[in-house]
Image 1 (cartoon, rainbow, N blue to C red):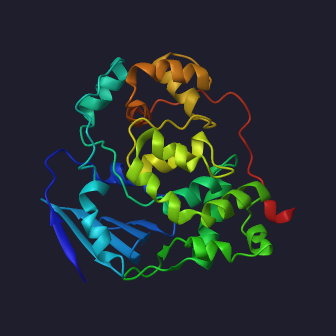
Image 2 (image 1 turned 180 degrees about the vertical axis):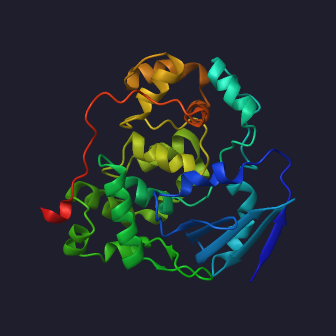
Image 3 (image 1 turned 120 degrees about the vertical axis):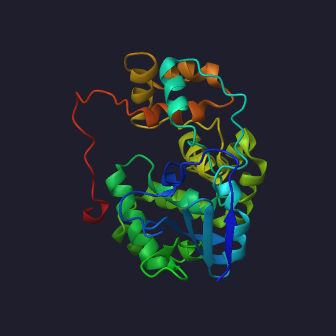
Length: 295
């Protein structure tokens, strides 16, 4: 099995950097156990990557995609992330940045693996989306090489073979199903978004029917570590940012105004806000999960 060691030249918080790749508890593509395990589709085929931190970063990979995953290790761990021009415009952001110097933005280089779960997370609770992703991955993905119990996400080809009944069984409604199928049909073209990066990459993703600003941002944050990709439209985010930076609730327009000074690194500012632990007060009823399988 191929291995690689790598020494970062910057502070590195391995867990915080890789945790955004986990899609909820029980994610069959992600495991934190003596380091972090990731199962992935790559241009060379399926692969598994195990990363742990000692005095250096030690990585081991399995499968046809092993070499590709090891080649991408520095980018995955934030080596291409340039935060030198970032300016703190709020004491909370400055304090978190001081306390968490290892909080960087990594890039997987893989669009499809981020796009599938992002579409599943549209307009539903996390509980619903994570359940659907687990079921689809375990049933239509492939066992992860070298990592018993993990699965590689379903490929676009596998997704196109899923029947209507199987979608229903996984709790995926018609709107999200159509968006996933539309994305799968042009998935090979969408991988170019990671090469384009920035707004241009997000615009390419938004050409897919059913993929909007929120979904494109969620993919951009993970696939190419986009520092300016804010998840506008998120059910909770504007409230959290509002209470952290403005002392009260905001809508998306208000959040855009508060974050404007941080452009072109608005997502980085959001990451610092989320790392601060500030939350919005819970005053209203929670958004209840729906079970589309019963419909």
